[in-house]
Length: 380
Image 1 (cartoon, one colour):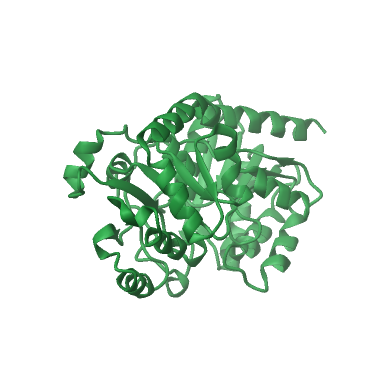
Image 2: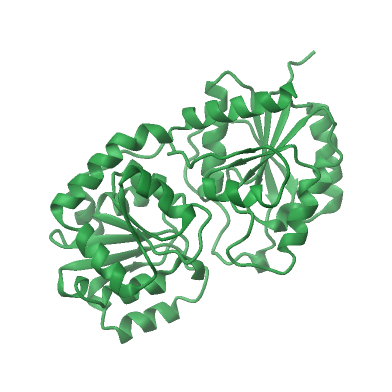
């Protein structure tokens, strides 16, 4: 008789791209290092093409993890959900972890979980409980899921607090670990030569998929304000636009900032991400709303100080680790804070603080804490 699988992790995984898929791989790898057996179930269909805002949902890079990944879930085909539940019952894992980042997946997950053996522990790893781009059905779909989940994992205290106000189930208030397979940082001068960036400028990095809630418009406006507009500072905007790029181009033109901005409107793969972070001085996250951000652990890996908005989901690690600054959404304040951060002595100070804090964000620590949480649930 085959040995029972310890964990079945359900959600985006290779060949899907993005931070959620990356952290699924890291979580699975970390669990395996802790002597657990793991299988990942991912989607053969995730979003219908007509509602996906980007160019592609898929990763075309070489996959460098040794993981068992099966593409078997169709997120909007009810007949498929029955087949998947049968397959799970045959596999009979000890614990299922579903990755919950949008209420769109609630019907799929509910109809799988309600057909799964009652002896299997069912955990939700929640990225966002309240989506940034809200729909009137969100609360209804979230509430339907609650009945079928035994406990919750999070990647930030902010999401844990939100869950605590909405569910009466055990919650692990976690943190966003730093992926261990990220490329090593290269010299700033080498990265800038490769990118064609000026070697002497101070460069602020805005990185990630461009959506309205991320506040790129606020950051662009801050670049036109004193004192930052009187310095040799540039803003590098890196990421695929999930909304119209034209409004940003128009704003840049109206504010006479064309010579102060590098605009690269493509999804950044792992190799180019290394160049962008290595070539920058600091990172800015002027988000309007946030649960947490995978950009912060990326910045920590590359030892880059971070300016964040005054939001619980962003500022907690920055304040605790003294790894950057917190600002309101006022462009004048952002300008002043960025100018302060870009002083050489301050950059050295923030970097040293990041170095001193980085071991607190390992996947091993996250997995150890998570396993302790799950074992307590199993003992009840």
